[in-house]
Image (cartoon, rainbow, N blue to C red; front, side):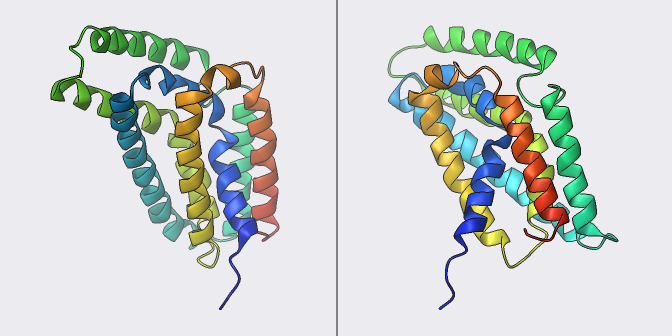
Length: 205
């Protein structure tokens, strides 16, 4: 029986958080009650599944390109540069301000709803979690696609992403205020992306 490729599980885990800590704070305000946590988390899990599915689809075609590792790794390095200068991710200013206004409006409507919340409110929470997570993490689809080009390692990487998603929900629900104190998570994410990019270019992933 082959040993579980722990290093590639860790790669998936890192890939998820490379651009995601500040995105986590975007949906944290929705997670105020147990039922809200369940509804929003369901939307987040669905968004993650769609992102992974899209990445698998794109990876099938990326592998057909000439020098796929060079192209995939270069793509991650470029994303790292964009992330470093706040051109992608939930932290870019126009994006952040737009989502802040929309989140505040949704949260205010939810707070006016009866307790326990009715089915309409639960649907709104579900779609709020789904839309917020999916739209702020579309760039991860490119990252995952580059990592999924190797069929031998993609399952372990996928498992790492799934576990990281679960941890991300816990962070948003219980530790958002702690992680909000980090001054430059985008710079840490950029460094992680550069590392992943060079690893793909070198055929290590």
